[in-house]
Every structure is written in structure tokens, then in C-alpha cells.
Image (cartoon, rainbow, N blue to C red):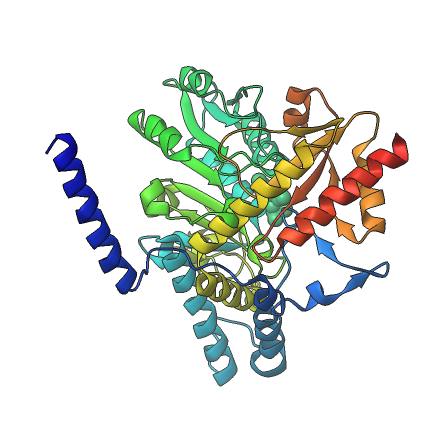
Length: 436
Ligand SMILES: Cc1ncc(COP(=O)(O)O)c(C=O)c1O
């Protein structure tokens, strides 16, 4: 349909649709979060620091824990504590069932094909070391290449350096643009028939860039190269679906997604995990042991040597329940508003420069101020009860790319408020006055 009459017709149709939609429930639209109600779930957010209400903007380092997680861990130790597997007594069977249930829950949360693809680790660092070590020993030969990017956290650089050192493989890194995005043309040019793995972060902890990992995974898979995603940051801020991403490995830490420290997850494609040699040896990961040799347990136990972090896994389950209750889409929408608003406030301050200006960002606001070291910014903000982080954020190659030693970094979670974004900006203005 064309012309004015057609336009009128389509406008009338839209209006009817709108009326119909308004009358129907809207399940796909993320519900707005009520910060006041949500903040009540986090006991630590009620604290005062140096006489001021805590403004916690260090979520990229670790997220705070809702009461539900604290209760789950405490209940486990008060009532249910036992070692898992092989126990015949009631408590052991109960703990084993609870531990296995969280594995199923994580598989659903990530949309993994099966719980066999979910390995519990100590955290993202441990997950990446597991892959780097086991994949290298299984597959890498001298001259093979591993491709990372210049924005990686040290946890997604050093394990690959160790893997290369042990096998004669070579580590390559895709460069970045001035805005702090991966230079995709350069990355594509670095993929070649010696590339054996691409390891890339989903969301930069230092500057907040969201990488177009689906495209990168597509390019790598066209060349039959597996891809590991460092999801340490994205797991708390973006919806993650490993089948939709089609990644081969996805690593994250419990503590960044409102769960306990000391627990993490490695999602791994079953066919790859099956082929890979175990990471560590010990109890729980074997099928049979003789003094001469051993055979391995089925997935995922093959990669879980020793007594695992039972209480922490239970706590992680409670954290995922909590996140699912709020909804990853609603979380992403709320944090995007906060980040946009805080960025607008900070970039208006003369002498302050935001580091990392990619159009696609989440949660992280990194900045520098003329003539003031980020550590001084962090210390002065702390006096106002504002917790941010200052330093290289375990991303020294990224800092080198920007020609700076460090940044001040505010990182938001869904429980932060607009008022806190304003306190951040006012405190940064106060720092400027102090040094001006
Ligand atoms: C992007 C990224 N990767 C890896 C890590 C390492 O996580 P963890 O120290 O929990 O193992 C972090 C932690 O800050 C991170 O932000």
C-alpha cells in the first residue's frame, strides 16, 4: 500500500495493535527494577563507610551478595554439610543431589545442551587455565597459533603464554581501535590455517566494550577454529546463551554474578571436553586407578579433581535463582541507563577523559583526569564513601594501547541508583577542585 490513504490505513492498524497490546500482558519487555526494594536484599548496601552511605561502584571486581546467597551458604554449613559423591549416608547423598542440581541449573541458565558440559572450577582464571592447559597438551604442536586480543584480562593472556611456552605454539593478539574496540579487520587477517584457538572477552573489565563475539565465533568456525569466551564480566550484565553464541568454551566466576568467591564455571562443548586430557589428577576424576595407570571418569567429573567447593556451588545456585528472578534482560536495560547517565555526567567535567568510547558498552566507566593519578581519585572518593577501583585492572596491554598506566574505574550493577551516579560525578568534581 502506498500514498496518503495507505499511510492513514497503516496508522489506524498500528493504533488497533497498540490497543490490543496494551490490553495483553507483555512478557518480553523487561520489567523496570525497583532499586529501593532490590537494595534491601543486599545487607552490605545498608552500610555506612566513613560516616557516609556506601556507594559501591566496584562491581567489576566483585559483586555484592543478596541475603538469599548468604542464607544458602550458611544453611548448608549449619544443616547440610557433607562431602559429595561416594557417600552412603543421608547428608552426603543430600549434598550430592544439591550440588548436581546446581549443575543442571547452570546448564539451563547458559542454555547448554547438557549438564555434562558444565564443569565447576574455582573461577574464570581457573576455567581458562583448565582449557589452556588441557587443550594445549591435547592438541597444540610447535608453530600452532592462539589468537587473543589486546583488551584481554591477564587471566586470558598468561595461561595462553604458558600453553605456548610448553608446546612451541605462538600467541598472537588482535589490535584495538582508538575507541577501544577490537580491530575486526585485523582480527580477521590474523586468522589462518595455523590458528588453533581464539580466546576473547565478551565484555572488557577495564573499559566496558562489548565485543561482537558472535561474528568472531562465526569467522573462527568457518575455519574450524574453536573459540573460548571470557565471560567473567558479561555473565552479570548481559543475557548469555551458549548455543545461540555457538561458542566452544565460556568461562565465568561466581563472585561476579552475586555468588560466593572460590567457585566458577567452565562451559565446554562436549565433543571437545571428551577429547581433552584432564587438567588435574586426584580423587573424583578417575574411573579406575592402578599403580601403573588410570582411566578417567565421565564428563564433567574428569575435570573436577578433589573435593569441590560444595557450599560455594550451592551459593552459586542461589545467586542464579536471584538473577533469574530479576531477569537478565531487565538487568541489562537498567544498567545501560545508569551507564549512559553516569558517562554523560563524567564527560562534562573539564579535564576528565573517558577511556573506552565504543558504542556498545556495559557497566564499566573508566576515566582519567589531567594531572591527577587515578589512585588519588580512588582515595579521595573513598573518603566520600564511594568505592571505585584505580589501576591497570589486570589489563596492562590495554593500558599500553591507550598510553596510560592506569584509570579510575566505576562499575555499575543493577542495584546502583541514579543518585549514586550523581554522587560519583560530584565527588569527581570535588577531586578536580582539590587539585585545581
Ligand atoms: C574479563 C575478566 N576476565 C577474567 C577475570 C578473572 O576472574 P577471577 O579473578 O574471578 O578468576 C576477571 C576478573 O576481574 C575479568 O574481569
